[in-house]
Image (cartoon, rainbow, N blue to C red; front, side, top):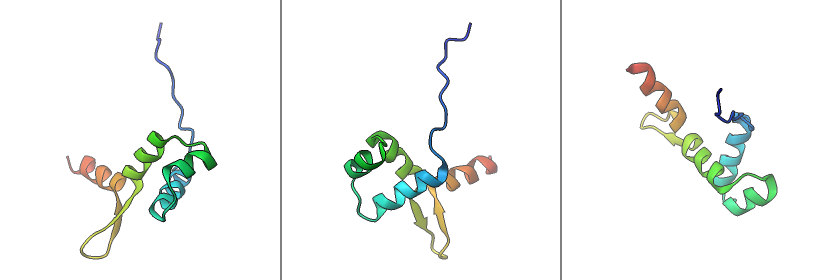
Length: 74
């Protein structure tokens, strides 16, 4: 018998990215939690995954994209 708890992906990537965008544009974690019901730990994790970085050549990538590229190269 399998006793593992099944977790579901409750929020779409688009929703997560919009939360990150709000955080990058000055909204607080407490605002996001209050208005959207998203915990600090979840929004903090999303910010680490979806926050954008601009490379030297002007390309904008996210940490998630970087991780995917690293997995593909190994």
